[in-house]
Amino acid sequence: MTRITLIPGDGIGPEVIDACLVVLDETGVALEYERLEAGTSTMESSGTPLPDEVIESVVKNGVGLKGPITTPVGSGFRSVNVELRKRLDLYANVRPARSFEGTCARHEKVDLVVIRENTEGLYSGVERSTGKDSAESIRIITRRGSERIVDFAMGYAVKNGRKKVTAVHKANIMKLTDGLFLETAREVAGRYTGVEFEDRIVDNMAMQLVVKPHLYDVIVTTNLFGDILSDLCAGLVGGLGLAPSGNFGEARVVFEPVHGSAPKYAGKDRVNPTATILSAAMMLDHIGEKDAGNAVVSAVAKVIMERKHVTYDLGGSAGTLEMARAIAHEI
Image (tube, rainbow, N blue to C red; front, top):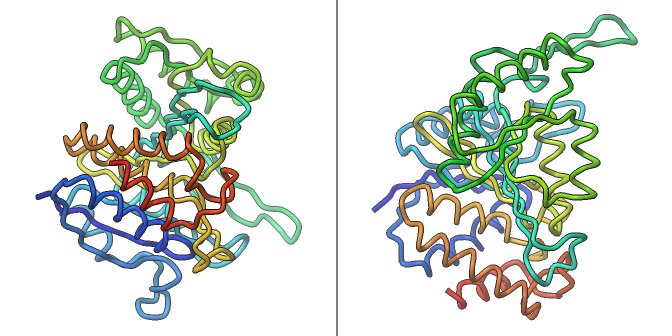
């Protein structure tokens, strides 16, 4: 039996996690959950949105499944997601974007993966006020951080039969930071055979993805660019409700949907659980239950294609739990 740290989160987090568990239970995989709270729900009881026991549990179990957690805009605590990744050194954020028939997405048969550096760049949190009307943020790029994320991306491509890795940067303008990232990426890619390597400037990459996403396979980039481009890719295939992710470190992984906590929808049984369910499928693959993970993805594809039990964002009227039960039924 595999023990999983389960972090429901807040907002819609508990709903999509509970819906996901309905699907996981149907796979027959022996999983045991250690359920811990983080986010707004722990501020009063613990004085922090990220209690130490959450970190300790993931370190102990090695695998976590997490719902979205609210990050206040402009004030309040820093992102729990960012802090969790930094404290656990979850340096590689893997965000697949795959088309499903029946979504009415702009493009069909898209199947690409954004691999985002997770621990440095502008999300390092090194910023300060420089006066009443100005502030500055420091963008940190290191050779070590660049080397390990590109090595992860190249290794991911080899392991998953992917043909090409594209490094995305802005080295034409940010010549020192992105220059270092690009230089390191080229060095690392040169160690691999059988996988094509190229690079693109980030603004051009955004346009290329909208116009011809089928030309791309695995994209590796820095923290902020990866955050933005992965949301763009989610839009190409039907929205954030279909966007899963995994945060990988050397010895531990946390899987979570890309979308936010959407507190205005909390408790309304409306939101799409697919991103969380697909994140769980990634988790099953990671723990060696590849057949079960494939069964979950196939069930998701069938339910979306039939359009009978899908949520409002996919053109249906089903609730969160109804869609999850339909996916479980297909398994």
